[in-house]
Image (tube, rainbow, N blue to C red; front, side):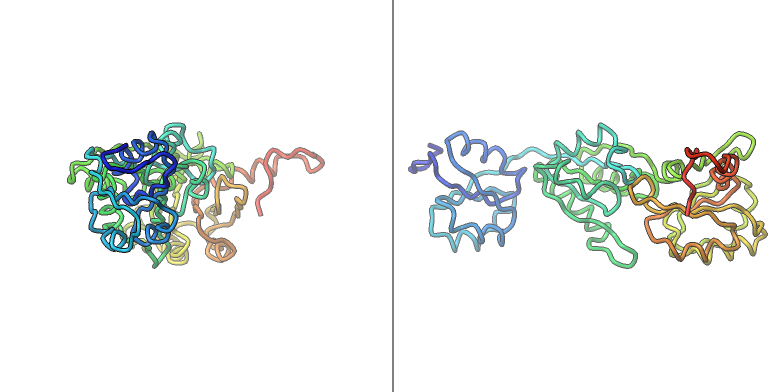
Length: 337
């Protein structure tokens, strides 16, 4: 018995509250031989009331379930939620392929109780990777955000304050155009333990998956990673054109026409080799090569997610193909479309 005059063995208990806040209570009822139902919000709890022989409200904000308690025709017990503070882990999920996520990242997801997932990275595998977690879609599309950045931060902090192990899953690396440091700052300000698990960034891995090295001995000695989510300014374009290394552009498909026309305007050669790699590292990866002058036109056949490479290294995979005898049945690289 757990402090109430009920025979609990084989009783169906509905626990209303966050999983993390009610974990200790759930363990106690389970040890008594109860079958458990869980509801993390009032609507879900109302839908399961008829199946329950006992309603237990265990949450840091129990008033969320006042409507449920009023509607209950079974005994209602209010249990104290777990007092411990949870944690937040920022996890880089890599460029897309599941087997390019780090082992540390896989372990973090296996232990997660709440996952805030971006649309990029291996989010489609979360049912297997994070079987005990509540999954919250925090993905952002151009011009459409289900949750704003501040809302994501607030909800992560709320879940961690309720005792949950929170994982923020991002594509690539959290600190490469991922707003990861903003989330570290928000968690720190709220006195929530926060850690970062780096991920393989698409700025290097996606070109590599297409056979393009971002640096190559005798070709270049530097590469620059650029976010082109917003059009690049004139000074930025001039500086990029003068550097002489590889330019790797992320989030640049929506502004590619402005980028190409701008680079040509500031003097970059029309025949500068370029490549677009779409859905890099995945089974549907597709690569196109083009000179700078026709890059914007070629880009119309591609869609996000895609990485744009501008520089002499972009032609290196093609040079290997050209070196393979036409009669060979085992080409060194598959010719890009």
